[in-house]
Image: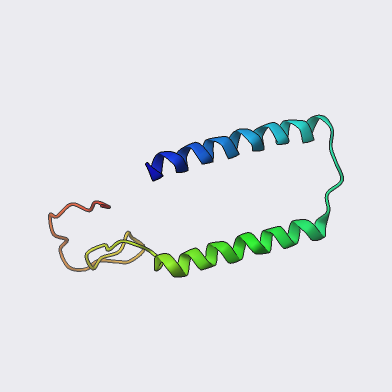
Length: 83
């Protein structure tokens, strides 16, 4: 039930933001830079708080990386999947 409520909330917010974006394109308003910076900082702090609460990356890779490293030993035949 919570997931459905979250999806509906995101869709409503998306529709409202698209409508507001169309209005701004048709009739631009001056931008309050100070207010924009304050809201951006609040958003950043909220995201950092959620990162701390959620605990970071969130899943294991079984001791190997996605790439960027040279693997000298033979790789196993195990598949890599995110679960």
